[in-house]
Structures are given as C-alpha cells and as structure tokens.
Amino acid sequence: MQPYFFPYIGYFQLIHAVDSFVIYDDVNFIKGGWINRNFILSNGEKTRITLQLLGASPNLLIKQIQIGNNCQKLLKTIRQSYAKAPYFQDVIELIEKILSSKETNLASFLDYGLRQICNYLGLDREWYISSNLRKDVQLKGQQKVLAVCNELGTTQYINMPGGKELYDHASFTEQDIQLSFIEPRITSYEQNINEFIPSLSIIDVMMFNSQLQCQQMVKEYEIV
Image (cartoon, rainbow, N blue to C red; front, side):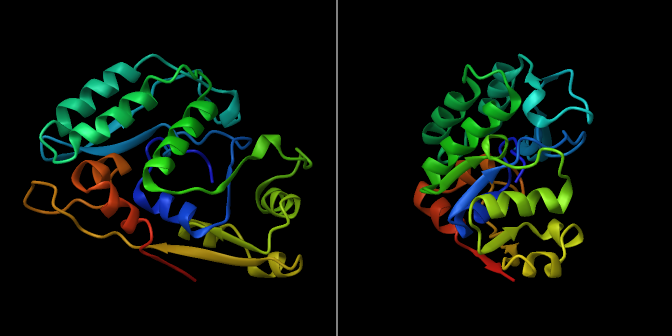
C-alpha cells in the first residue's frame, strides 16, 4: 500500500490481515488522495488536515517528495480538536512524537508514523519498503505488484476494496498467488457528538477508544 497520512482504521485492518506489509513508495504521487491528508473531528465537524509538501507532482514518485514545515501547526490543531477526548493524554504523546520526526522525505516520514501507530495497535509484521526490493523498475501497475509478490515469495496478496478495479484474479493465479481483498468493518463509537462520523483518521479512533479497544477494532474485518 502507498503510505498514507494518519489513515483510517481500515488501513490498519489490512496490516493486521497480512504477515508482511509493503510500503509502496516507488509509485507516482497521487494529488488529492490520502498520501498527505486526512479528516479529523474538530468542533463537532469533519475537518481536513493536510501535510504541507514541497514541489509535489504526479510526475514524481512518493519517495522523491519532501515535506513542508506545518507539522507543529497540525499538532496544535489536533490538540485543540481533541483536548476533551477521553484518551487525549495517552494519544497526544504519540501524535507529537510522529509530527516531531526529523524526517523530511515524505515516504520516510509517513513510514515512521505508520510504524509508530502499529506499535500502539500491537501490530508486529514483517515490514518492507518497495523501493528497496529487487525488481524491474520499469514495470507498472499490476505487473509491478506481481514482481513485488514474487520477490517476497508471496502465496496470497491482500488489497483494499479499491483494488478490485485494478487487478484480475487470472494474472495472479497464473503465478500461484491467491488474490484477495479486505472488507473493512467500521465500528461506531462515542465521539461526543449527536451522530457518528465514520472513517475519520486513526487519530479519532485512538482519541475516543482505549488502546485495548483499538487493538480489538483492527481485527474486525473480512477477507473475500
């Protein structure tokens, strides 16, 4: 999976579902996607937070982009938004650690944040960076994914639901790889507002649920 900025819980359910997780950092940056932005709850409303980037372009790979200098501003926004959340004190230390990282490369910065959150969620998986793997760098799309799978000796490849439009079972079956997809399950929880807003950043989940509850929630999915 491409590295995302404080992704929603479905991303971590995918990590729970696999033995080995690959940060897909050597693909083109997608403008308007989840690589550098997400949603939190602020003043009772769904609010977007965006990590500033320098020279971001769809013509560049994720690993070729640098981050800007708005991390402390984002930290202040998160502090103000969740100051009254029940698990604020525990979680804000983790968020501060991530946003205070000295990493300036986008891929490395996001990788660091994902690893820190995985530690909090009790997710200990084999972890790989795509650009460090041996493969034909000219490959694109499905062929590139298959090359990564073969490099790691994969028997089953699990992707998010959106991958159903990108990959076909026959191509994977030809290489003795089972193609599967995760069906995330979003469990509602108390957010101190009238109506639950689902699929916000993992920040929201952690702020309103205990660490043990969060660790249970990442297990709630199906593989199809």
